[in-house]
Amino acid sequence: MSNEYPDLTELPDDWRRAFAWVERELGGRVCNLQRQGRWRPAYFFDLDRDGELLPLYFRGDRGHAEGERVAGVLDHEANIYRVLEASGLPVPHVYGLCRDPDGIVMDRCPGSFNLATVADERERRQILDHYIELLVQMHAVDPAAFEARGLQRLEGERALALGDFDQWVEQYRSAKRRPEPMLEFAIQWVYRNVPTGRREVTFVSADSGQFLFEDGRVTALLDMETGYLGDPLADLGGLLCRDLGEPLGELAPAFRRYGELSGREVDLDVVRFHGVRFNLCTPLAMAHFEAGAQPGIDYAMYRAWSIVWGRATLAGIAELLRVELPEIAPCQERPTLRTPAHDSLVHMLGELRDQVADDEALFYERDRAYRLAQYLRRVELLGPELDRVQREELGKILGHPVHDLVAANEELERQVLEAGPERDVELLRYFHRQTLREHELHRPALFDYVDRTLQPIE
Image 1 (cartoon, helix red, strand yellow):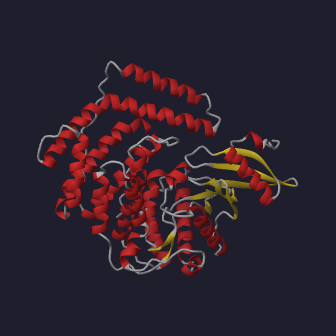
Image 2 (tube, rainbow, N blue to C red):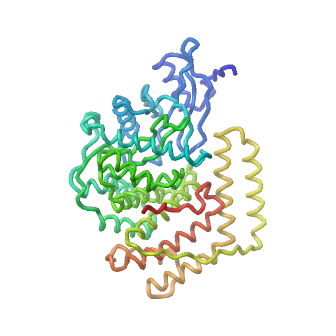
Image 3 (cartoon, rainbow, N blue to C red):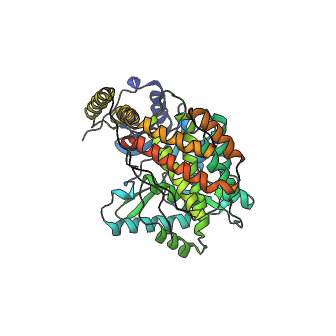
């Protein structure tokens, strides 16, 4: 296939500047552009250097999604890649950082992602085993090499257990727009149940389990933007988080393998705690997007993440408390006179989306609207009944009839902030039931996350 050389002047201003910078700084001519269809601005492309093509990836700044949690997050990630590459680990080579717009230019590595796409179970286990081997190697890199690149070593057992959790909570609280009683309950639980006795410090990727693979081997470790120096078992807890989006297979054998190769004791309750802590970070980061409309936000996706990872947070707390979680009664759709309008909108947006199935970026943009319409149709069919059940349950918790759910959530949040551990089970079970109801409301727009929850480890 012949190379396609775009007219950079026809690109949006930010991407015109980005690729002009690439050509100027790296030398060569940009060709074969393909925008990645996702929430992060990113492009796959080749750089033609006198007839030799260099496959590259422009990883843009997430901007609104990152907030103020980490200053200079792209520099932070690039420095981590540099240390890991120098240590012999398979990561993309960083060619440079663009400042206008912000982005990392790095290798486009070979391979696929998401182990759930591998049909052969033996091959899946083989790839996961190789990832665990690389994780052990990564944890063996001298933390001083990362400190020389600006990472700060955490000191004290509380800091090692919490990692960067305080930063996520601070970002959530600074952007908070409405009462969030479930999130406040989970935050209080994490702070009250910090594991003790953690002392070892290594580099941890935190959002672990992100890698490319090919022919039964990992070809590249990816997405290091949340990496820090902390408790190595945090990366095992991170796998419990990654498994929700990209199923990894059975993790208990992988954890045993990690212990064998690293010589570390793998305390599963510590792993579970890190899973709770890190799973909670997703709904914390999504809360203010869900609470108010903002241009450019993929509401359906962000809401899906919040529901699935919030549910997993509660499941992790239940595992650590050794309590059973309740289920809810099946939800029955109740059509109204307005239902045909919702049906028509869903059908129309689905047709518009399918017309551009071959264009990844445009398909993603139209799919955002389609999923949001599916969600709103479901709210019209189920919302009134589920709101009635929620008012009834809240009335039992608050001790009086509930008519206004907004006011009731404000009152519940005040109770959560004042409550001690004696109310943990009561509140946990209520929030789990409510999360299941939200899961049912959002079911048609949950992408591939339908019915996914925390993988139990024994």
